Image (tube, rainbow, N blue to C red; front, side):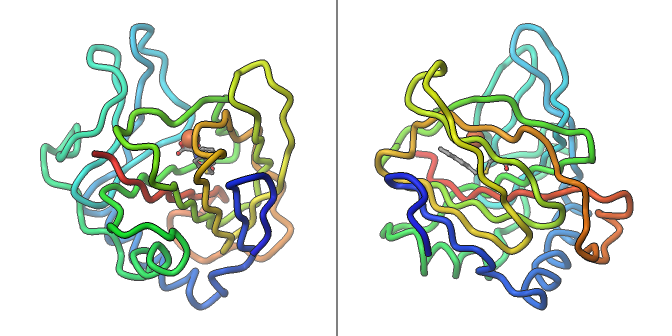
Length: 207
Ligand code: MD3
Ligand code: FE
């Protein structure tokens, strides 16, 4: 476990290959119940390049009319989100150092060309809880900035099985995903990764 910046801890290879495959099977089931959707930007309606779904009592969604928010139902099916896979709850218990379980697990799916521009995560009511992130699939170039958009930033590679916790002084820092890296390692066999790609899971407290 390495503290890469104050409050940002990176656990490289926290999930071994067998655990990554077991987690992928859980996500395939979750996505069958709660299909990936393409969120759109508030006001402009511009689509994200990342597709998303959620697990847990609450899920993060965004669209032109109603903007960024958490809600208890899938925006297209109207169904409740599926439960958070137990192996993720166990990782939160082991690493988050927070006395309550996560309320949301945002599932971000990156195709080869997807990116996530620099942003802060501030749609949650309580910033005292950390965010726990799990990466699966292709490596990516992750950028961690400062508390202001214009602050300098550092890049890190996130690989399949890595877990990162972002708490304390890191919780409100700007961050994003510049791009996926070409896959050299053998792909995780999954219909989700038929054309490559990456999944990032973020466990969050919301209220
Ligand atoms: C640093 N996801 O879902 S995960 C997001 O790889 C998001 O999909 C990226 O940013 C991804 O909001 C990055 C790592 C991460 C997550 C939350 C953070 C880094 C963070 C919150 C504060 C600072
Ligand atoms: Fe974020």
